[in-house]
Image (tube, rainbow, N blue to C red; front, side, top):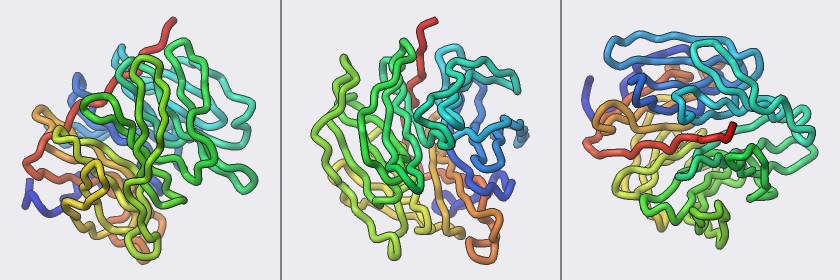
Length: 290
C-alpha cells in the first residue's frame, strides 16, 4: 500500500453509486453495491481478486447475517438473504414502498436492523426498525435521504446521517427495546460548501467517520460533532466507508459518479483504501427468527 495519508484506488468499476460497503470477517473481503446497476461486488485484499454479481433489482443496503450470508434490503421493500448469487426471500415486498427502495441499513447489537427508506417526489423518507421477528416499526419520520448509521461503543447511542438535510444526528438508544429518542443534531454542513453527510462508520475510540457527497472528502468528528481531521479525495462524490482487514486498521471508501468523470473526477466510482493507524470495530450482524 502507498502513503497512508493518501487515498489509493484498489478497484475501479466506475460505479454510478457505489454504496453499502462492509468487511466480511470470515470471508476476509469487502462487499459493496452499485445501486442503479443492481450489482454486488467483492474485493479480497489478500489476492486483489474481484467478483461481481447481478441482483436483478437495486440493493440500497445490506448487513452481514448471523449465518454469514448478506441480508439485502432492496427495491419496493424486498428483503433477501444472499451469498454467491443464491437468493432466499425473507420479505417479498412492502405495500407502502411501491416504486421506492431501501437505502443504508445497520444491524444493532441484538440483531435488529435499522433501515432507511428513500424520499420520493411526493413523500418524505423514513427509517424502519426491523425486529428479529421480521416486523417493521417506523422509528424516524420525515427524513430527506436516510443514510449512514452506526452505534457508539457503549451501545447507548445511534448516529444517523440525513443527506438531503445535510446533517448528522445522535439518538439515545435503548439496547433492550430497540427504541431511540432525544435526537440531537451534532453536525450541520452547507451542501454548497462542504458537501452532504452520506455514509458513516465508528472507530474504536468512538469517533465518527463520515463520507461527504459532493464534498470530495471524508471527515472524522467526535461525538459532539467537532472535526478532528479531514482527508481529501480526487473525486466529488464520496458515499460510505468501513474499517476492514485482520486488525481493522484499514479503511475502504466508496464513491459515485462514474458516469460523468469530467464533472466528478477521473476516478469517480472507484473503491479507495486508506491506512491511518487507527482501529475500527466490527459491525453487528443481523439475526432473524426462522
